[in-house]
Length: 444
Image (tube, rainbow, N blue to C red; front, side, top):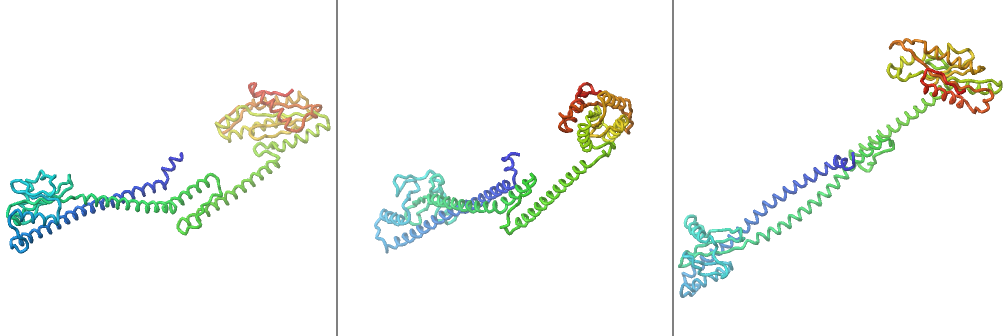
């Protein structure tokens, strides 16, 4: 598993992803609520403020009309002067308005460059209908495209003519308020992200990092690093207790493994000592390999002193591993015991017979000539090949290949140790195996 895959599959990565998703959902929810409530509130406040201001204007126009009729405040000679004074009173509240008549003629325009809206005829009728049926002094038309609120106020109550007052209120203040709201939202997002980042660091250090430490320590322990430990002693939470238990377990594992290793080494040493001190092979009753080597050393020294020849025969069953693998060790052991019996039956009391490790046998012959040793080897070969070995798996015939190392007393001075003799016999054995098996080969 590569590093990238391990990262994506880790608990820490999943926790951080879930936490980020939860944070984004929460943040989106909060921002949505803020926008929905605040935008609606801003729009309502602008509209209410505009209506409040308009109501003040209407109250002012009523007072103006009443005073004008009494003639106590204004000395007005004609309708033109009356309209002029009326316009001045409107300017106290609004700077952008138009007074027009029912026949669509503009009586007064505070901004000559501006014209009546396209919907003014419809709005005119609506304002008059609203006043007639609901008693409301004005009709409102909100133009979202141009960001303007149009207030239509019938002036029949205030002037002698049935004029209509169109007051325009720019609602760009809503946009300004929204810009302020955006700034506040950005600030809120920034503060929330800072807190979430801070919390993410705490989450990593408090949970994810200890979990990773346990995973790394466990992996090292499984790889054979018995000294691997988790150091969380400065913490006082559950991870500290878990680290104490983990370290205690690791120490116990290390102690047990070292104890088992020592026991294994002890058993190996005992086995080596026993194998070296064993004289007889348990299966065949022949001498053990180690004891056979000791006897060769003794006979080499004795032959040098007495100036006599020495011979070693290595015997190996042909294709024994196939039989052993096919029918099992029980059948194989029976065959080895029968071969050992045949070898012993062919040797004299002066010959030393032994079983080497596995299926190999050896014969040490002293005071024998080359012909006598060759005859002994051939006798063993014939005796084994003619025998029929009975086992639980049936009757078997087996052949052996033999290699002879014959060392005359004159050549003994060139022999440094027993390995030279065994090696020479093995070379002859390999020659017999390579020449077709079931035969005898020698080094002379």
